[in-house]
Image (tube, rainbow, N blue to C red; front, side, top):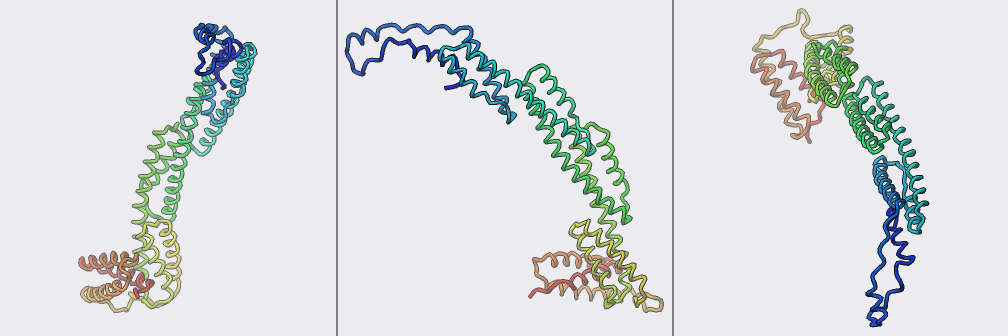
Length: 388
């Protein structure tokens, strides 16, 4: 057995002469054996000062090895402890003491080297974080590790190091998540500004978050607060951008309504308008923004090209009652077309929403808006296959 030098030394002394002879055979009634059994055992000799020191050092080293194992790469002194135990068991206590003191020196040197390397790595990770635009409150943690090292309290230094490493790892993970959220907000904001969508104070709130990140020593609590603010800004963007895109889509659909339904050059623009509507319904803002860009270009090309259009001077105009009757017939026709779709399909659900919206607009006699909604629905149904 290893790690208990004093105990092994005692066992060694017993093996060298602590007993006068071999034990008697089982069941023996020899008088000599009986007398031998009554003879008192020799008292165990008290440990020498060297043996007591060996015991204290070996216990200290075993405790230190437990700390080192937490580092994952500390020195292993098992071989030296075993060698010292065997030496003391053979009566060479001075030699065992030399072995243990040498093990102490190796442990301290190797552990200090590991601590120095891990502390340097922590400082490198801190520098990398600062280069990404944030300064975390880590100086106090790193200074405490250095103080423990200088006071030669390796146990405290190891505990502080492991605590700091866990903290830095969590901060890095949380910061990475916040960076992704801020990048998403930045992208949506830039797209909205490019399209001229009014954002009010939203853009300024994003800039304020970036400014405070650059000038504040960030703690875990502050990082959580920044994440909540960023989530609020993203929510506001998800409200402002669809509203702006929907308004622009309405204007484009009004422009397209001046062209006959069978006007081939406007077919591409009508499909793009349908794409914008679908993306907005599904909350796909980036796709909706790109479709609006394409739609703007298509509308611009239509306006430059000569061609027949409804609503030009000289064209006949229908009364409100005539328009209402026409739109009601259109709505009933489209409702019948919706019934041919698979009832559980996404297209059927979208169509049901739009026909309900158009019906409410007709009830309120908002004829232009109802016409646009029904036209949009008609285009959507034209691209869907009926149920077989």
